[in-house]
Image (cartoon, rainbow, N blue to C red; front, side, top):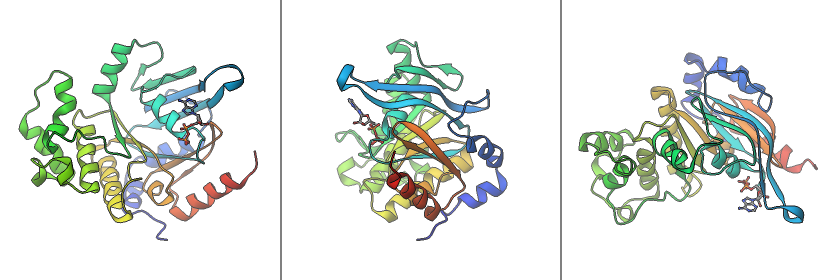
Length: 277
Ligand code: ADP
């Protein structure tokens, strides 16, 4: 296994990641008011009540520094998706606080939360979620149209060009490969220039070569544009593209690695999956 993802080494040598890495090494503890794109403080999420209550997240405190790429990993059912949904304002925690770019999400009305998600947060899913009847450029323009803006064709084309699809603007999703569809989804997520881009297994439905292309794009957006990316993945190779990896077990943060290659990440994950609670 090639344990070092291309691109990241350069970033670590030249960028401010070293600073951030120190802070994220103490992942799971409480944070000061640093320069974070997203910050979760003692976040809990319980589903159901009484005998049927499930604690998906318990006292999770995590901060995602601006301009960094973080992967979230853990065994199935450890709370990764719930964490991402709470951090992105798609779900409401039962307790604790989530702050996106200085805005506290807890207590926001549904309307304000929807506006914040639309304008300040990008999300990509494993299943792309493109609208099949729309062309690539219409899909990419959608978030701005929903916000009542009229995106210029130049801006939409630029977003598609950024993901290497400048020549596919008029194609519909069925006329595109899986990797191309995910790149359209990326362009759509980034057209609003969100403060943070969340990905829930964004390469989960792609073959490894295509997945690597998407990860290289994400890495480039962090390195070149200062984009903040938070990605749930079960794949150590995918996670090795990130600056930091935070691990969850049973809804709690259980360690973190910074600048780790795929082998080290895989070994850490195996330990978590085989250690009895
Ligand atoms: P992961 O993404 O790590 O697989 P999830 O965040 O999906 O984990 O789930 C964490 C826990 O919360 C699991 O035990 C799961 O069964 C439970 N859970 C998730 N969503 C719901 C829901 N809507 N209702 C009840 N339990 C849920």
